[in-house]
Image 1: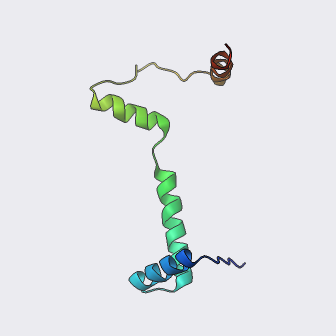
Image 2 (image 1 turned 60 degrees about the vertical axis):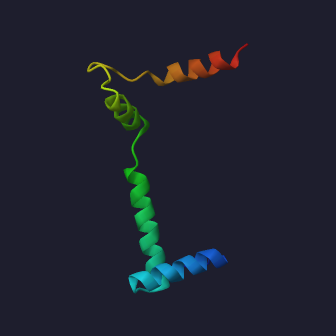
Length: 83
């Protein structure tokens, strides 16, 4: 399968990464894509962000806290949209 990108900046960046890594441009692009995908997968979830922010302030969620049912968000959207 072929990937053909015609962008000067992409070419310059791929060549620079290949030079730094001592690899081919193809290997540099594969490496960069894998690294980006891995990093995005590891990003914290909104719940993790909320826990981290609360912890900074010495707070936490209640131990028996349960998530809201999805229909609650649907109702909230409609309530906010109404005059």
